Length: 289
Image 1 (spheres, rainbow, N blue to C red):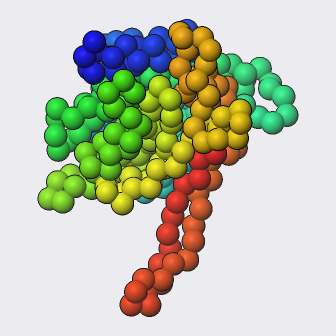
Image 2 (spheres, rainbow, N blue to C red):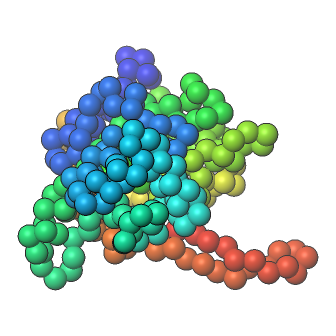
């Protein structure tokens, strides 16, 4: 069995599982991805129209057929300036609206009133395969991108341990997924802080993750559960039809769990740093639990 075929099977298993557990999934979805804004625009538009009809009508009246592009460009600008986490938690302001446009509904800590419950149920979580994300290299494709209401929140590169390890997925990010290539355009899906919040390197046996891609200087951390005897990595399941890393899509990426993580546990950390010439600057890093 070829490496490509093995990875395709692994990719299919993850996507089909997510599709059975609350995620939207269709093999042709990559065609609807907008590489200039890194948005899955159909879901963004559907979310706004379904959950904020008064705002949608006001925007449609003001912009007519140009609304999709106006909204996409405004959301992209806010993502670049404020960061994905802030935009998800605070929404975006648009001229003509009395309040910010909400881009996701998180579950409140204390109960749900009917309107919030309806909006929470309307969240559109989508997994998309083989996303040609790059404005610089149109043939480059990330194995998986996960979206919440059209906003990219995670990417994943998958490797088959039969021929490649999780380290190969890490190297793919470090050497082939530069968010700011020299002489090229910024990569909106990969850039910090306005791109995906977390990037997973995944094999059948291990998961590593990074929240900020910085080329060859990118730091990936293990995202494993550990073994029963206290070792690193993950236990190999007794069931040959399971993967040692299936906790990622069986637990972490379940819609309720992921939305809870985004709402309560992802944290932007800002630290005062000093360079070798004594110049002070602030370093931002995202903490993903």
